[in-house]
Amino acid sequence: MSKKVLFFCLGLAVLLASCTTTRKDAKEISLAEAFSPYFPLGVAVNSATVDSSQDLIRKHFVSLTAENEMKPSLIFPRMNTWITGGADAIANLARDMAIGMRGHTIVWHQQTPGWIFASAGGPASRNQVLERLAVHMDFMHERYGDVIHSWDVVNEAISDAPGEFLRPSPYLDRIGPDYIAEAFRLARAHLPGTKLFYNDYSVLDPVKQDKIFRLVSELLADGVPIDGIGFQGHWSIYYPDGATLERAIQRFSALGLEIQITELDLSIYNHDDQTSRFDSPPPELLELQAQGYQEIFEILVRNSQYITGVTFWGVADDSTWLDNFPVRNRKNWPLLFDENQEPKPAFFAILQSLENFDSAP
Ligand code: GLA
Image 1: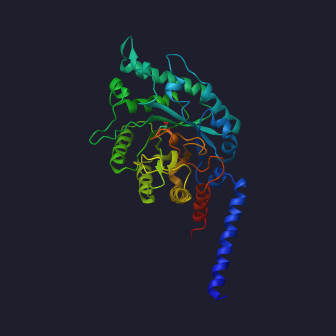
Image 2: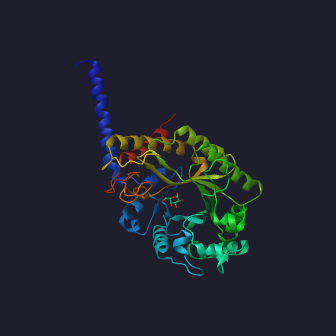
Image 3: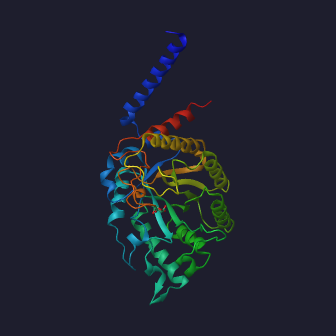
């Protein structure tokens, strides 16, 4: 055997050995523990996955977000009526695990009951809507203040339409353009002891990013109490590129804001792809997904001084909102664990990003 071939074989053997070790050790690893020097790892859960994925949740995550159960339409469907069963189950798991939660969300144009904006058959006044927000915050603080560490006070207020700044919303109609500032001021008073976040998608799109940057800069200049910005992170195996993500993190953190990635998942379909081409996840796409996650986590770890949390939007591929969005009944596989709740290549890839960072000169 030539020297070259010998070295090649030895190299391959070492590589294979290290892969098998990593895979064998997967059962021992806790992702949250591995990332604990950098930022807390969280996960969105729902009334079903708190049970069906509980082992993974307990092992790998140290922060929970209610996928829907704390949204106003579910928890505050009628005046003076809160329906708390779903949210309680999630908060109780967090309490049992002695970990915290992200509160999601207070002010949003979607999943908000119409009564908040109505009064005696007509529109509610500015003061009525603000008062209802305050009452709701008091309730949420009273019931969940012991577990919630951060709140998405306002979700998705910026418009995607060219030339339009704030998205049309009943909050904008009833309260006026200062509704975001007012929501944060109320939140500081009525949700004490929590970090207050503005949360949105497409933060990496240059036009939308400029609008969001303008919004939070103006809030800060006006002395509005905002602590951070949530990048939702509903991305794909083709997007984003690392440099864009890194620039955005640094741009917003330069304002003194904390950054949290709040809803991370990587669709195996491109954003505009409406086809349903796959019955099972093609291995080469799972490999691309692993590379995408690895690049994202290399950047997050490298910028961890600005990042106070990273939350996945779901535990495992057996339960993901992307099975019905943007195409109904199209299976997707966007998370770190597969449909059998076993670790995917992406699981090992984000651990690899840590190893690369730790062993960098
Ligand atoms: C947005 C919202 C989330 C959730 C996702 C889709 O990102 O912030 O609460 O509804 O869409 O599941």
